[in-house]
Structures are given as C-alpha cells and as structure tokens.
Image (cartoon, rainbow, N blue to C red; front, side, top):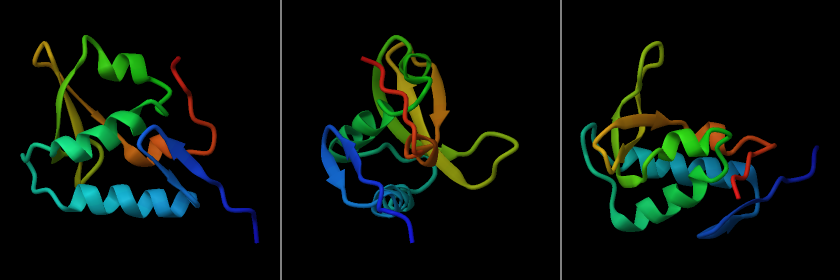
Length: 106
C-alpha cells in the first residue's frame, strides 16, 4: 500500500487525497444545479483553485462568485463554475485540482 498523499490548501489540510476528494464531492452535492455557492464554501474553492494548472485563465479578471451548474460537453453531471467579475463563466474540476502534481501560481 502506498503512502497517503497529504493535500494542503490555504483554508485546510487533508491527511489523504481521498479525504479531500470526499470533502469537495460532498460540497458539490449539497447544491442543486443553478445554485450559488456559499461564502464559506467559496473560500475553500478559491484555495483549491490555486492548485489548478490554468489558475490564471480560470480566474481571468477576478472571481465574483462560484456556482454549481451542468458540466460542459462531453461531460455529464454537474460541476463548479466560476462567475467572473466581467460576468463571463468558466467551469473547473475539483478532481483536476487534487492531482498529485498541482501547479501553484505564485
């Protein structure tokens, strides 16, 4: 059995990557399609997003808020979306952000 891979983001630390996956999956499933994400959950998503290899592209001119909506084609289900200050929107994948080699935009 391999060593547990700790996930550290600005708002919390997960002892194992699987714990982080469960945390964000449960967060996603608390919301219905079209719902805006709470401020508390938004802080965690903002911290998680820093691990995305395209964080600058995802954030764009700045984040206004997060919401949950249908995943874009060819995917199914729902996912988190960023609504930027300029009203443009882009999806992002929490599993992508939890990969072993995150990109940290400093």
